[in-house]
Image (cartoon, rainbow, N blue to C red):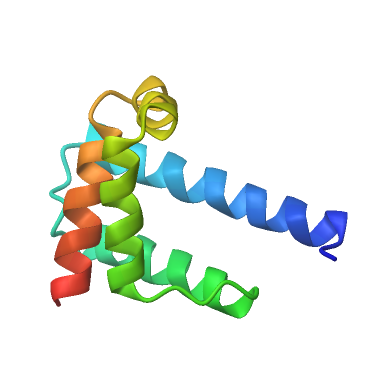
Length: 97
């Protein structure tokens, strides 16, 4: 079982990652920018270190799934309009590197 502290750390990291991605989008930083790649790199490293093996391709697939899934799409778009699309474009560019 996952302990609450570990779960909180993962939830915090996920929120922090999405907030940083939303900020990049609002600031007009391109999805291919090195700063965006670093955010994704750190996010995937965190997941992999915390028992969630995720490849860049898995991450791109997940982002694409969010676009098709009303719940996740609504959640991301309510945080920042365009975030789901920005995340997908960034994840796909990252996976192709």
